[in-house]
Amino acid sequence: MREDVREYYGQTLQSSSDLQTNACCDQIPPGWLKPVLAQLHDEVVNRYYGCGLVAPQLLEGMRVLDLGCGSGRDVYVLSALVGEHGEVVGVDMTPEQLEVAERHKEFHRQAFGHGQSNVRFLHGYIEQLDSLGLPDNYFDIVVSNCVINLSPDKERVLREVHRVLKPGGEMYFSDVYADRRIAEHLRQDPVLYGECLSGALYWNDFIALSKKAGFADPRLVEDRPITIANDEIAAKLAPTRFWSATYRLFKLEGLEPACEDYGQAVLYRGTVPGSEQLFMLDGHHLIERGKVFPVCGNTWHMLSGTRFREHFDFIGNFDSHYGIFQGCGTNVPFSDDAGAGVAPSCC
Image (cartoon, rainbow, N blue to C red; front, side, top):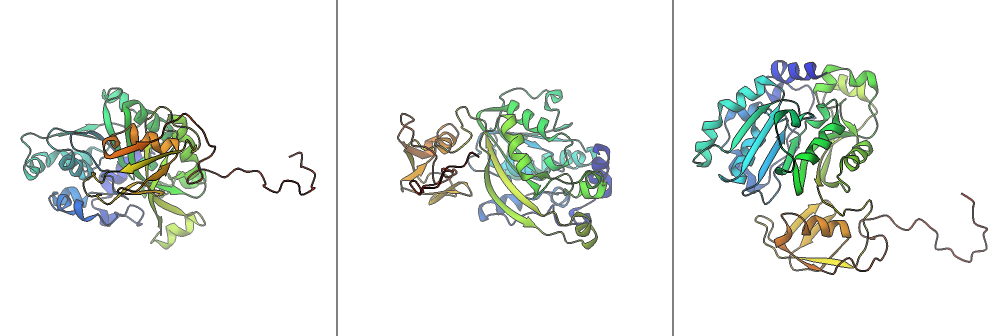
């Protein structure tokens, strides 16, 4: 399957218009990102096959790794955002794509006004970052845009990401997910696989793999349903449904399997550029400036143990535990119907 994917993205596809479905379809960028996108070279943009936006906030001076960087579109966007003193490394297994990326390093260095290029590209597999000499605890952020679904060993990808991330670092990435496990014969179809569909993880398997790799509490940032604008391919995959989703995974000690309540809260200072009034940690945590915002223990760690710390004031500690956090955890599973006179079930 690796060879099929390499051929599909290196030779079959010459631009995004050659895709047979709309699974790898970019989202409308926020206003603050549009000036950076406007500076990118046309060839880099035309060979882009992502399904989301992988430009998290507060990147100045960061070391960033892009898994499956392709022609380098996201690498060059991140290059502008980390600034001249940051670093962006792109990894891809397709020589033709990397050739496009390499060809335009000088163009983007000049476009962003850097004295020297802050990007480098490596030819290799995203499951084998160790073979590329990427050290432990090196990167602040790892991104990926609609690529992990193409990997034959997704568990190893996540383990390697956890290895190369610094403590407090995060993986921020978009990918395609399914509402069920894909049948084996469909996963062997090179077109369905190359179109980022039949290699998609069942969402609940992704959650389990993330936790196994060390990312205890995956956070969904945003998602959108994918409609397959190709009747033949849609019929092959029916009734499976697909979504493009962006997750963030933090490499943090102390995260628990569930959201636990310790009576804590945070106050957002309004100091993250571009989010002065409202900070979004994930789809369920939209934190207004200056308003006391109750949080579970895991959210506390995600804000206090990462690059977001200086932008918040923290209320409380971990001295007292009050059970499951009702805002983002699960409710107590037992009935409140005490004294109803019904004998308890043995199961």
